Length: 389
Image 1 (cartoon, rainbow, N blue to C red):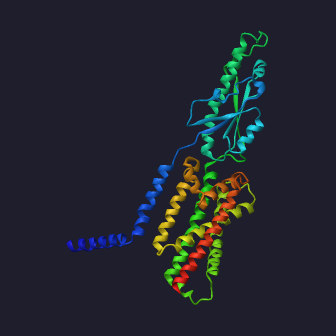
Image 2: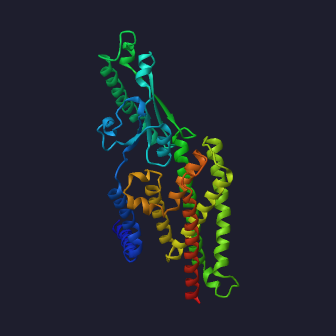
Image 3: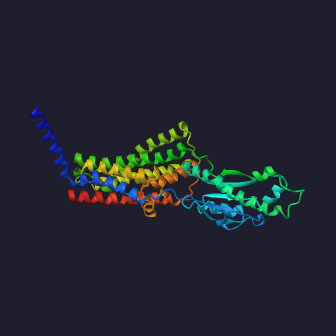
């Protein structure tokens, strides 16, 4: 029994020494996840307030000062201003200056005096189910505040301008308005559709990254890189061959996943097939390039696997899958743009659920990542081959 325990503890000591003698591996295993969690905790700022734009027509007689409609919820709702027309408010919504429009009619009092209930129009444009739920919750108190101003106007007129023949119906005074909510997005916000696209981008990135990372380390372990000293193949030809192979493999799997999403899960794909294909191709190229770079800056297969897992962890936290990037501090939002999955997620949600890229510059960002990582991988591979020669 004592000998068995001694042998077991000898193995324990051996494994501990192996890890402690490789500080880089220890740092990757321990420091990497701790840093990611620390950055997550320090940079998380919470859900930003919903920005509301009010439409108060000049002929309505309602207050045009945005402060008159404030709900005193500074961390939840922010009244960003008032407009006199619905068209100008929609322009602010399309430009991203507002999240919700609350529009009062220009003849609310006259409608009430004629026995008609007033419709307060509420519009927003989102495919995010979480944001949809938050906006829907705030729509009612916003409409109630406009309702309050309309009732106040009726009460002010009751003693002087309203005759007995055109006094409003008491039932209308009790409920003078109704809220008509409208989402301008072409698809209804659904969890499976919205997050399914994000999961697709994450899977494609991790698959391409892993293939690129393990391939180069496999060549190194098998001695293939040493053979390139006499082989009639250049670093550019080697990189090109790997890219083509991994694009074919990852592209086939990605195509199957897209078919599964659209046919079996009911996720809409409103954009042309060419736009979606271009997005996924750029994502695959950038992911494979990142994997090749990681493999060329490490010396062992275990290290590159650890870095790939750290990249996956960072992508889950900061790629827009688990939490929307708007809930993080601006410096982290900027840093997260260097993850291929971040650009692909936003583009994918637009292309699949809107049919058009609202931020087309993200195509350029993905293309720049793919080109830049390819150049870095080519330079690193040439340097390694020169060292071996």
